[in-house]
Length: 456
Image (cartoon, rainbow, N blue to C red):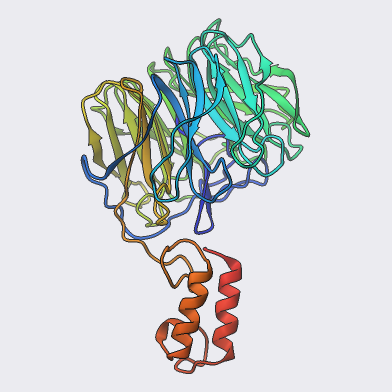
């Protein structure tokens, strides 16, 4: 699975539990998320710029987000060998501190997630564990300190995925959990001001081995639907939120083939509706929506030589205004990105980021790990317990007219000093407003306005 919450240059993006209308402009339910391009072309290459984030024995899932509120992107990890939920704090430059433990005795955590489920402005942590059938969450104090575990259920047989979204339309984040044993299905917990009820409804998916779910408004009717994929088939199906309150669901099977491991949605062809990407055991596919009600989908294979495809995420990695994909494969530990050419019927060019032969990539996420305002990729590997990230070598660039000094992608006192220096010397960097070629009060106003607006 693959998830993140990140903020850079005015960008907020997450790969799970969000509500999109077009992959870049979210519906006003659940968390407010946008997914946009952030700069020049990606400079990923095979086996280039790999950096360690940390080690957690038997990594099963990772999630990226700012857990300590310091403005950089940390990594949450669930590790099976030591039954631990923990996080690696980012030092701000892409180096990471030692793992900080959140919870112990989490028996085989297969899925982790984070979101502000209590509405206090920070990311709380969640985990589902396979061997004790338990779903837990931990409250964040805002600085990366987590309280004791709070168990919401001990009867979810082999919890496999978690998303957060406003299922009942009351403008707070509910929790949806999928499980894959005992006629695997999914159900949701209602959020009432940070207090959660028991399982409100088994969504009734009625499948045997659900591996991933994704929350979005797939039929564009203003409420949150759920996409899901099942190892035993179907590899792509969705549950329609019938009535918008999460109490009645209508299932739609799109692809009966087996082998589905992860699923995401976004507007891949730029026509204003939500398309879907699915990674199966041996294939990565995308499904073009016709925008109907309910939508019909047309399948195109992106990558057919994948072996045990595990994880897929969607974002504009090369900053050209369309959505690309990153995938992780378990049996040969490929991490690849798939470049969207931006056409009305897009083609995807596959670029291998890393192929180290270790048979166990479990999850990939994207985030700005080194603070340079482009998207990097991180992967969690079961064998060896490695969490590593791959650096996007796009040159750092300003994210605002007021972003005049390094470090770029953040506005601080160094930018004020740079502006005043350039203004005093009549340099072009401070000539921000008409009349151009004159350095006057209008330039000061333009700088202060841009500075106050932050990175965009």
